[in-house]
Image (cartoon, rainbow, N blue to C red):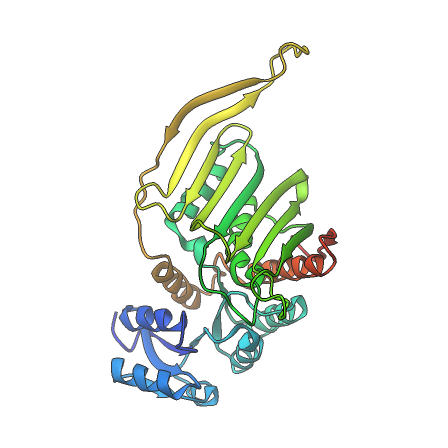
Length: 344
């Protein structure tokens, strides 16, 4: 693809995860990375030295005033997501926003409405939806191999980075909420969450959270997130009434496993018979692995080019924010069940 045909891209926020967006868009032939924007001088200095052909600026207005920029990637600190994304959408740009889309359901809904009114693409950085193992897991559900999905549970724990300005729920849970919504094809009706602040009690920042989300059809998803745990676990289990599957993102060679296990009530159920356990083979599907972030970046460029909504569109981001908001309310109320309105 020639440079003239490539899509003009700007990345706003090049520290932390944002530098990985810069790396990918600089390498993709479908993209013409025109701007890197960051308020921190040290980050700008590093970016200018690494990418000398790209304009490095401190002010997002410089990005939005250049008509050659069609797509804006927002990878700033989460509290600024709404303001930067809103400005880009108003300026007529297609916008990608890192997770979470923003910090309230009202703000998320406003961005979705603004994108729709302006005919713009709004995409959210739910990275795992572009993981080959999650895509295969979705296909297994859609083709009926697992049967009806009954419930999902996920663990995302580690003795790792502890944040001072957001709790483990807001920092870690968006990954698993987005995957649960994607696999179940729905958003939760209600959520309840309990947690505690062991490391920073004076700040009120929960470092461990257990949450249960309730979906239509009596389905559930349970999520455990923590920065205070002896294990590094990134695992999600899907239990169907025919088979079960496990996505283990820490496994080097067995990212996805399908278990031919289930429970079958006999035709005539008696007290003595109870239920019959079925145990079959464990299958490890062959996956063609690729960097999920690279696939996510390509998906954004495809959406910009085709004008078709991506998998992680603005509505999916809104659904996740509503669940996060409900979970936060439940934490504050000691685990109360919080009904979530406006879901799908």
